[in-house]
Length: 155
Image 1 (tube, rainbow, N blue to C red):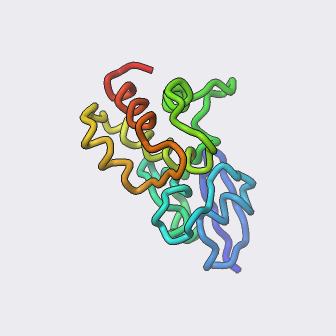
Image 2 (cartoon, rainbow, N blue to C red):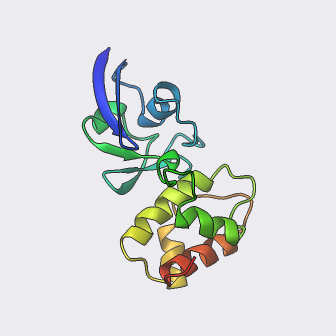
Image 3 (cartoon, helix red, strand yellow):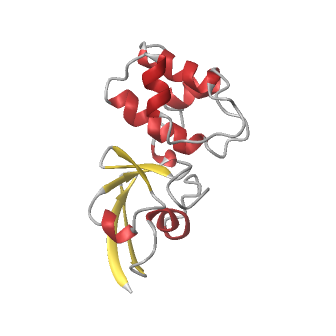
């Protein structure tokens, strides 16, 4: 067992864990944040995407010990203090960019990084940036529309 201390959504989470515990399992099982979904557990589907020091990462591919002392942001950490939706969440909602919702947290975290970088509204670039996130329901059209609106400064 190893002690780790992570900052998750602005709060410290300290735990004694097995060194082989993934960040995704740490978030779900130790921190109790189940918004980070596990799909393929091979880094292919993007469902487990979170931000690590502001950059999107596949939490199924990282060990929790690798995030020691770093800032992890999950889908639960982006809403306002009053529970208001983040603009990325609002854009996904207004454009019906989700159906079953399983992939949505991973998409939103990927898009959040893209928007924070000053996203380009170019559809080809948008599709390239989200290519690591798989959705089996939507066909991506509405997801791209939501991102384009965010990149153009709307929402």
